[in-house]
Length: 223
Ligand SMILES: Cc1cc2nc3c(=O)[nH]c(=O)nc-3n(C[C@H](O)[C@H](O)[C@H](O)COP(=O)(O)O)c2cc1C
Image (tube, rainbow, N blue to C red):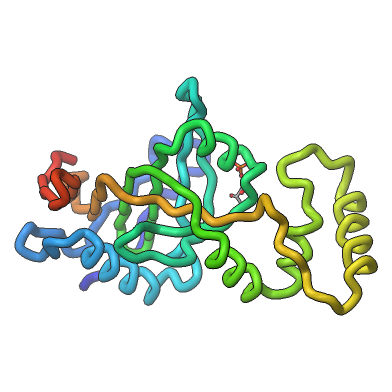
């Protein structure tokens, strides 16, 4: 596989002059796995080679009941044919939106590979025992931050946040950190995957897998 170097016209005053040519190998139908999970697994493994920890960062898009969208990055922590899992605080905007509207989208962008993967589907909660197991596995400082953070509420300043952490540390001493009830896992079960490979002159390769009657149907899409 050929990896290209980014080419940017160095005129910082005009973004219209920014140009990047996509030069990686194309994606052809005969190279595709019939199962999008296998295709995803292959691309993620290739991304891990060049993006390291960032390979698993994904943009999560949600929308409230009125269709107002919001997007943010979360980290993929597990996946299998049941779905893709991340952990968060359900009091957050995303948690509130998902409570109103379980439809969501995930986006992976692996710049060095000139690839993106777009996934849409519906979201439900990860079982409590799996969330407990993951929480226990986190570094203690991260557990304390999660337990001390008044998720998404306005805080007066950094000191106020640190004060909450210190109070909790004093309170629990060397004891275990209890997982906050609001700190949970979500799993997106895909209805569609799109694999996008950047190509020269913007003639990109796109393949969409859609789940119909429990089998995956593949279409090439125009760029
Ligand atoms: C690289 C990166 C990884 C992140 N991972 C997570 C994550 O796994 N879970 C999470 O709740 N927030 C994560 N965040 C923070 C979110 O992007 C966001 O700020 C936070 O969850 C609040 O979002 P919300 O108010 O839209 O719900 C991450 C941010 C970045 C930049």
